[in-house]
Length: 319
Image 1 (tube, rainbow, N blue to C red):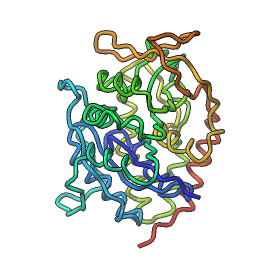
Image 2: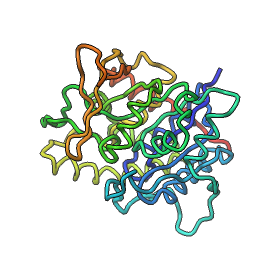
Image 3: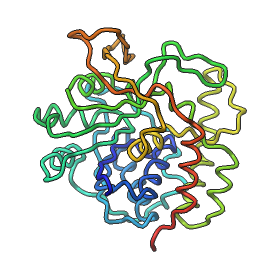
């Protein structure tokens, strides 16, 4: 039996959102019932999502553009300028719903089936849904989030202290609202996702499939890789490791069909905003300031990589 989900995404900047959507389409265990977009230029992110769904043989999946700025406004969201390159042709007409992503999430929560959400972008759409309709939290069966920084965050010889991640830090107030909402949350943190990498040889194998869908993905990866190297190189990381993309978001999707890819612990987590930095602090004992969250604490990175690549290699979108 497949599991129906809504994918809430900031599609278009880091290529891992596109890779997560591709993995959802390539996984028979997952039924993608809607895509909601969040972040700067959310309407363009929706167009990119719609084009990937079209190329992936799933144009019937509705796409809803959502919040464009953080809940307290300000310049919190990324926009690098390459978004959509390799995927969307300029001027191409694409089907995007007129219903706002927040309203679509609320409507989905009222449906006959329990709502499961995979959130791989900022928490703004979910926070606004909670503000707009307080009962929303009780109608969400599960929320799997890519975000947070609990233990040691390291890459390329550089230790990030304190650890930061874009998804939760870009709109700290929204993240605070969501993590304190009482929704059953599973947190796939940057501690573990930075260990999951797509390599040059994997990209060559995916490119060899040579469908329009696979070509769009490989083009988007090739456009993203130098951006990734520049960002991490600027932070002092050694990026000469053959990594063309991290599998942050694909891992977050993959644990829905195989949670053994990670080891999990229920941790008492305090959500804190320090200045403009959102922190997820682990405590030994429960208190009024903490909430129990199921957190990924380690990952079988090679199994994730193999699962992702093999599923994409075997996926053939219907024309």
